[in-house]
Every structure is written in C-alpha cells, then in structure tokens.
Figure 1: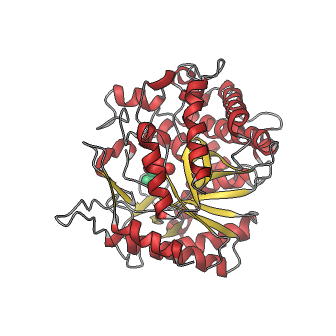
Figure 2: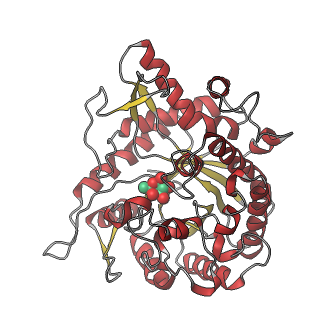
Length: 441
Ligand code: FCB
C-alpha cells in the first residue's frame, strides 16, 4: 500500500457540533427543520463536538489518520448569511485547524454540508441566484481566515441530496417539493461551486467537490429496464458529474425534463457563461459511495424508474440504512468515471456503514460487520487504483456516531461509539482495526 495514499475519517458540522446558539451562531435550515418537527431529534447538542473537539482530535491522533474531513457551518461565520463576519464563530474552526495540524492531521474542510442560513432560505435559498453570491462571500470570509493553513478544500457535499431531497422530495431541509425548485437549486449550487473554486485556489490550495453517486444497473435484460436504468443514472449521477467535468447538462435528461414540462425551452436558471464557470478545473473529485441499485421500468407513466432490491446479483448483505452492500460496484464506477471524465485525482470522501452495535458487557463494541464492509470497500478502492484510476485517498464515514439527519441518532456510522445521553466516546472494534491498517503501512 503506497504511503502517499491518504487515509482519513469524515464528519459534518450539523451532525456533530451541537452548540446551536454558541458564540453568535445564526439559524440554519436544519435548525428550523428540527424545530418544525420534521426530524425525530435535533442537532442542538449532537455529539457536543463544539466543546469536546480536543478529545476528538486526540482520538483521531490515536487512530493515526492522515486527514480529517469536517464541514464549516456557514451560520457560525455569517449568521445573517452575508454581511458581517462573526469572528467568534470562525475562532472555533481556527482552533480546530491548529489542533489538527499540531497532531499531524491534514484538514479537509467542506464549505457546505447542507446547512444553509435560514435567512437566505427566507429569500428563496438555493432557488434564488443571489444565494450564489452569498456563498462566494462566505467562501472569501473563510479563506481569509483559514487559507494560510488549509491546503485542501471541498466546496459542496452531495449537491444531489441538497437539491432533490431538499427541494423535490421535501424529506430534507428546507422541505420544498417542486421540480422547478429542485432544478434551480441544483444549478445554483453547482454555479456557486464553480465560483468558489478560484477563490480558494488563489491561495495555492487544492479544491474539489464531493459528489454522491448511486451507480445503477438494469434489473433485467428488458430494454425498458435498460432505458430506466440509464434515466436513473442521468437523474442521480450524470446531472452533476457532466457539468462539473465540462459536458454541460446531459442532453437526454434535458429532453426528458422538457418533455415532462419541467421547463419550456431551456432550464430557466441557466444564464450566459454559467456552464463554463461550473466546469472550472478542479484539483480532485470527491466521491461519496455507499451502495448501488438495480433499476427496472415503472408501469406508472409519471414515474421513470423503480429501484429494485435485492438486485439480480445476490447481495452480500444490507446495512441498517437498508443499503445493499456492493463493493465491486465501487470499483466499476471508479473505472467508469475515469474513462468518462479523466479526473486529475479522486478521493473517496465518504464511505461507511450503519450498524447499531452498542457497548457490550466487556466495555467494547464488536462491530465486525462494519469491519467487513470497510475492508471490502477499501479493497475495491485499491482495485480501481490498480486499474489505473488516480484514487489518492479514502475517508471513512464517520469518525463517530452522529445525527443521521432525519433518521436521528439511531443510525450509527461511527468508528467511535457515542452515548448520546452522556457524550461518552468508546472506540469500536472497527476503530482498532482501522488503526492497525494505518499503522501497518
Ligand atoms: C451522506 C451524507 C452524510 C451522511 C451519510 C450517511 O449522504 O453526506 O452526511 O449522512 O450520507
């Protein structure tokens, strides 16, 4: 295993920080989503990482990770979304970055892991083009403060989730349910990425975006299943990968959306040089991978595809999210991405498994299923590397059990168990296993 390969662990602000009102933090769309009862539990306290960050860095240092991916809360930096910078909020990330660097851990901050300031949502949020300017302003404020020490940045996390779960299906904040909103949000998020990249690169840093994927395969040879799988891939994957890599929005999807009346002629949100700006060269692609899907056609004319589980190939198991365990699809997808888009470098910015194993009578957490999952996916990543894909790193989701959005604290992805009543951290067997893997390099 080459030593230049980066191993890390990942988290995000709303899922771990807590400290909802500390040091002038503003309200985010997730604070609001919890307040209006759309979540079983809120992130008001979460893992209390805002207060326990020293202990968490110590745990990372003992684990031996090279890098840590976390996210910055826009509402701590600009409580009003734009305008006056809240230095007290930035102080937290300043200390965190210094603490990481002192421990020899490279910080990989993500600027946007879905927690838009609520004041911006009140003005239309990501459906409003002005939010793009606000994001650039936020990026500049963060870069001014941390850019002297942070050399790797991720602009956005999983634009598909933010745009579609948040604006079409409405199951995530801000809970909108409209196609025009989802399409406008996806475009503005991508545009804000394109405009933030040069701001961060100006300091000489490396910049990427973390795109999520759901590789799709037809559930049968039926040509309708093949077409449905292709459509699903366009909806879920290509809509984001294509524009980021300079191919614009996929023609087949533009036609499908036009035919279905989701816009008349062209996507109304797209203006002038937008597509060129979105296609700004990035230094690395972040890929979040958990599972793949078998797709068949639907008999409902309003629905273009139906995911089928289990897939035609016998799955090796499911995690507690109900996600099929398909490591080989990760290798295939990485090879496909490399052929299709030739990224300069790829990092697996998230991969992991939810299993609820708790602390046993021996005081330990025996999460063998997580070890099996991670081992298989790390091997799948290296298989892709052996096949010529420039994969340069891998981050486990997650460093610690945290607030799994609308699923609450019951879904546990961590290498470290967190007792949410007391905040007590207990490294799981998978933590010890990962530590072994890292120290044996
Ligand atoms: C991803 C998110 C991350 C976490 C994992 C399980 O979609 O980026 O915050 O919730 O799923």
